[in-house]
Image (spheres, rainbow over the protein chains, first blue to last red):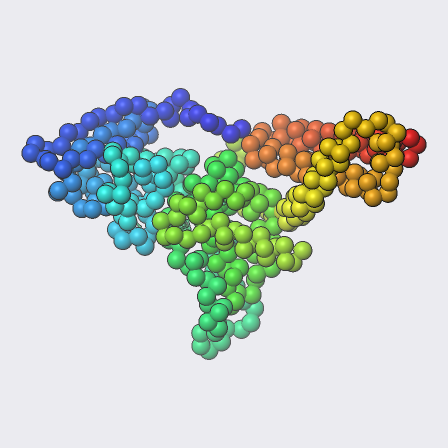
Amino acid sequence: MVEFTLPANSRPTKGKAHPAESGATNVRTFHVYRFDPDSGNNPRIDTFDLDLDKCGPMVLDALIKIKNEVDPTLTFRRSCREGVCGSCSFNIDGTNTIACTKPIEEIKGDVKIYPLPHMPVVKDLVCDLNQPYAQYAAMEPWIKTDTPAPNRERLQSEEEREKLDGLWECILCFCCQTSCPSYWWNGDRYMGPAVLLQANRWIQDSRDEATGERLDELDDPFRLYRCHTIMNCSNTCPKNLNPGRAIGEIKEALAKRQ
Amino acid sequence: MMDQMRSQLGRVRGLGSNKHGVGHWWAQRITAVALVPLSIWAVVSAVSLTGADYTTFQAWISEHGNLVLMLSFVVAMFHHANLGMQTVIEDYVHGEATKITLLITTKFIAAIGAISCIVATLKVALTG
Ligand code: SF4
Ligand code: SF4
Ligand code: FES
């Protein structure tokens, strides 16, 4: 059944408060979700008062400052710090986004940082993404052809190539995936917006010769049709992509071959 | 948890695609589109027939066009309601046994409701 409240052992409690260094004038409060599975305790929300004059502009800069200067046990993923690796996705100020391109300035009042919603938490802000990765793998995200490989690149017209715009840019941060209510309730069978956008990236590719098989795999009431066009996915994507529309294109392709 | 030791990919692939997703989705759209004019027609008819006696109503429903539209309305409505309920149940109910029981019950209720409406309409229209 759908769960509307957290299980008792997942309810966050009030955590430690870390005041700003003395003499700080431009102070902002960060509420950060902490969870340590080895401790046996409930998750807690720690607060960190940071001097923004001594901090970079993005939310990721604040997290790195906390880890370097206040609490080295804070655990989170990040790598590129420029919005291309998709590692630093969290729920920030109530919306899923990547911390490295989210300016602190854009947030009014205290900054709340939680892990991506409805995923098992490994530690602090790190959640378990094995399921969406496996779903991505199940889409077989590589070109499939029967025509023997040419001696040069496989050609595409400009129009054919344009069909991949809005799809290839996806960084697999799973902000959309974990914002989708259908994915929350049925993530074990519904592929989710990120994975479906990636599937569409191959369905729309004029060089691929397995379009029909790919559609067969998605012609399923759970894998694809759990999407009810709620559009949370498209509202949250930090790369301004539109997974909702990509899903619409898959449904359109399936309707065309009816 | 039967699946505990199974690989994540094996779990995701599960029993495979059921290959009938688009049919359900398409039927939902078609019945929805059909219900737009049919519901307007039903409401307008009901309003214009308020206060009419049985003989007037019987004469109205036994007209070929009205009878066809009424039966189409009943079929489209129950079919659409059944598909809609199925979607809601599949979204929110996760225990296999409860889910299947609810799905079958909804289908039976929809079928019996539709058949009973059709029989009642035909009775009035054809026998008076
Ligand atoms: S449009 Fe579909 S995939 Fe996107 S949030 Fe809504 S249900 Fe989920
Ligand atoms: S579509 Fe956007 S939100 Fe979804 S995984 Fe790709 S980049 Fe992230
Ligand atoms: S660190 Fe790579 S996307 Fe944020």
